[in-house]
Length: 430
Length: 113
Image (cartoon, rainbow over all chains, first blue to last red; front, top):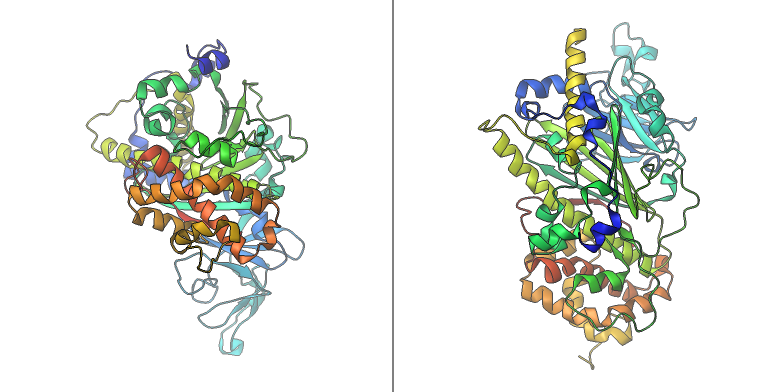
């Protein structure tokens, strides 16, 4: 074993057998290439789950709003109410169905601040509670009960500063959906990490394949080989051993924890050495790398719910919320969110957002720039692999695939999605 | 260069030839510039700024990050560009990320400074 592997090995056995309901056999990827499954999944999963749509920092005061155009689900308006709560409405006018809130391009999302929403078509107005407050030439209508009219409400609630909506007619409470294991994280200082870098891309592949690509730590020496060492046989020796990670499943959600390098000690003056074409020199210069800044900002006490697997040299915890959202809390006091929105069977958008505490000086700001850039350089490689996977799977030339122990969360992820579809279909709901 | 005006802090005037291309305020502009250059051009910029980078960070650290004068802001933007070209120059040996195909992230939010 190499140094890193000796240092991080735990001697733990395999994880998958701890979850007998997952099985260990080959799997089908029909759930990612079948149009029929895709449509069933939209009904069973996306139309009846709590979906994260934003952060409370996006709606700082009464009347602050943003819209989200969620593929296959519709456009919604999310707005801060006078009582401090956050509400969501279908972005549809009660008059003739026009999209109420948009700017310049009807298909693009927007944000802003207002006292009332006003429909661009015939000037109907809506209060922040979504109810109609003004009908142009009201006397021209027939038996109109204005008080009963509004933009239809969408269930909306917040947790740890994340805003969630649920398109179901009857939605279970958000806290019940999250469950005790997630609720333990509520005290994490998400709200103090207001330094925000946000990125978005579209990927030609089923959305679940994108999630698969970051649920395991089997791929790094190959997909990201050049970051680690251009010589694959060397790269393989520079990644943590398979038993260094931690996995946990609390259906329908799950967790993966990874080790990471400890921060560099403070640098003595003159210790950097002359400039070199060497990325390790760049990391030392800016005092940061993929795993975060070396000068870790103090954000106060952290919840005991982090690194519950007690892995050595903890790097981060990635919590996966059913169905399409992950927040990844890093040991060096920042967090990243990942979200995947299916557009069609073979296309989805991918949103990656990085949040740091505000930097106190240029050194801290530049360290954040390096972390953000490194994250994106890696993520682009992951994304492109998805396109290659989808196009090959879709040929159905092969129908049986094999998952190793390191890929147990992939096994679980597809199972909970398939289970949700099956449960919905057997309940006969539409 | 020494007789010409500089738009950077005086002690960094030797980097003035890189201001027009690389002192760009947004990631999108910097990334577009990276893709428009050859790897040799990226290497030339990297080799010019890397030896001055530690000193530049020290200079900027003495200032209020949220109230930087324009010349210091340009220097900071050059350092952001150095971050962005470091992977191509040191790791990829090409402007694009290897095997990234059509994948490209649009920047939808970034700090104002």
